[in-house]
Length: 347
Ligand code: MRU
Image 1 (cartoon, helix red, strand yellow):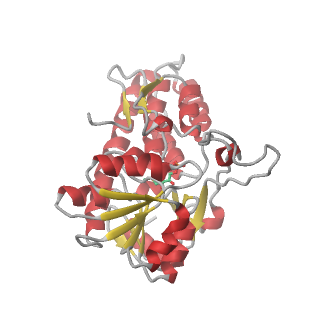
Image 2: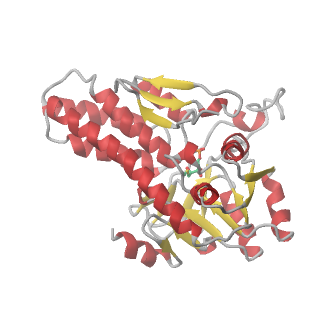
Image 3: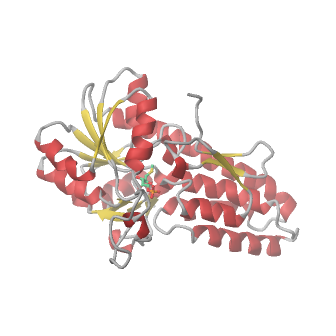
């Protein structure tokens, strides 16, 4: 199969190009996003998803949109760019990478007329992408110090190259390890209700030649009891200053189960996902999505009556005490995270 890409700037720089992840694994289709509405829709519908990937898409998106702003003067240009940035940020609330990328783009343009701002914006969005690649690589190298050949790894949701650039975060260690000759046995939670584990993680690992077994989320505890899991690997959408970590709904259950079975639970986190502005997980806004994703989205016929109430939070917060280590590009942090994160990243 030809190598796929997750998100990039089009050759003529007039569009953000993404693979439409809602169609995977059945169809490989790329989209060109040219307007703020198209970028917003692609992020909110999870055509592009995963914290780093939506940050990269927003960075490229701001550059694409900036070129079309009809004002040359720095004040009017920046006001319109801020309006567009706020619109993009409102597409999904939980992953901090989105607002992080938009803020970087706004800072790059600050105080400059359009013609001076555009080259700076191009440089900044390219930097966001390149930095993510470098961070994912370093995170993956650091992760390899925590595992050995033959380990059984449980993962939840998708934190691979479809969620970031190149290696990804949570799956990066597995992809890099494969290149270096490690053989892992990976168990992928299907990840209800949007099935990122089934549709994306097992697709990615399968194509990378990694031994992957798809399980229902509810089977994870049994696997742990049977001794098949050496470690749990997950990504994250926002890490608070004390290490509380927002990630895909169900992550906290994996962590609680891992604690009970004495299995290390690792969070893989680029610095772009740490939010020192959130003191604890209680400050993280959790996205709630339509109940139709639970009842109808992936089924031929509804699984519940139309009138049945649903609660569909897209993320949960794993308490810092449940996390064995947070693996970053600068090194591996251990509890208590308020100190260890600040030691590595300052503030
Ligand atoms: O709703 P999604 O698919 O965007 O959720 C993604 C996750 O929860 C990932 O684990 C997280 O963004 C880390 S990606 C490196």
